[in-house]
Amino acid sequence: MAKGDPGVTSRGRRAAPRSKRTAAAGEPELVQLLTPTGERIESAIGPDGTEYRVDFTDEEYRGLYRDLVLVRKLDAEATALQRQGELGLWASLLGQEAAQVGSGRALRTQDMAFPTYREHGVLYCRGIDPIMPLGLFRGVDQGGWDPNEFKFNMYTIVIGAQTLHATGYAMGVAMDGKTGTDDGEAVIAYFGDGATSQGDVNEAFVWASVFNAPLVFFCQNNQYAISEPLERQTRVPLYQRAGGFGFPGVRVDGNDVLASYAVTRHALDNARLGQGPSLIEAYTYRMGAHTTSDDPTRYRIASEVEAWQAKDPIARMKAFLTNQQIADADFFASVDEQARTESVHLRERVLAMPNPEPVSMFDHVYPTGSPELDEQRAQFSKYMESFEGSAH
Image (cartoon, rainbow, N blue to C red; front, side):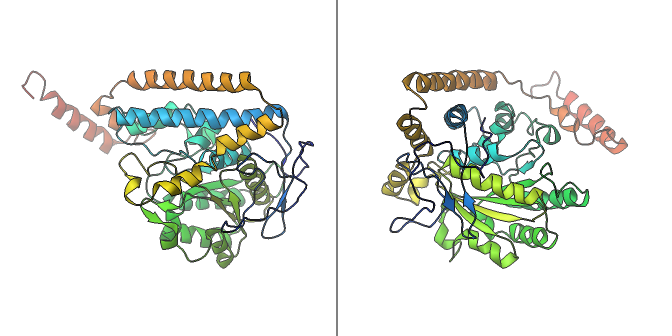
């Protein structure tokens, strides 16, 4: 697990001697600390002049790589399970691992996260058993983790709704006096580029700004809102929208786990100190389908996918570790084996999940039940009993 401080110079890892990342022709300006070829950049300057950098030990660098590989492998196993009829649906994060692992590891223990339905990497970083979302997509439960225990809310299927939940929660944090110190609490809300066109998200921006909520809006811009490309969503870079609501925005290379960490940690720390909300646009790419019910070949060309594959977040981290002699072939082999073992174990556990009894749908509606619920349970039980011994 990475614990580095983004405000401290990196530990002499022969980083490129430049302090501001210069965008290549045709590329957007963004915060980047690790190029697609694995070249380490000492620091990067954000649009407001903030300098971003990280300071990790060799073990923490290796830990980030392990996170990336394991998260991708577990995600691939879930996709395979759906294709084999074991899950009803799956929303893959393929290609977005660095944005999720980087931001997920930037969260402090007390911080609260509000995900969409694709934040499997953040879920993993929060210490939640990766089988939990698979139960939801298999249809045997509603997602079994405790948001208060893990500081990670339940998956949200309705596009953008979680930004309102996060804003209200963050307003409560501020009203409870939990901001203004280094150990204060911050909140992060995840959503995609398509969600920025939703009224819920824009309303959340308004409320968070007006009430100075300790909230980081984290947009994973994966270039497509299902089949709609980004240019049909906005005429300006998404991070620039923040200025219209009165808070800062920054665009980060979402395929760079180091930059994703540094930018998120800085934004969260500002929020916990009472400096209000901010917007991070993690510029990344969805390598696969929107969900397993989608066919991306109908709306994008292969050459575009290939161009983004050259920016793969895992490949660049591996190149960095190799070039800096932080990891060797034995380490990479051990990580691959760990990923394989955990994915096989995950598959076995999914296939062993028992189907719930129909009457169990009443179990968790209210924490202490209610007379009306008890009556509904009794009526439903009687209805189910009527099928016993019949041909139904």
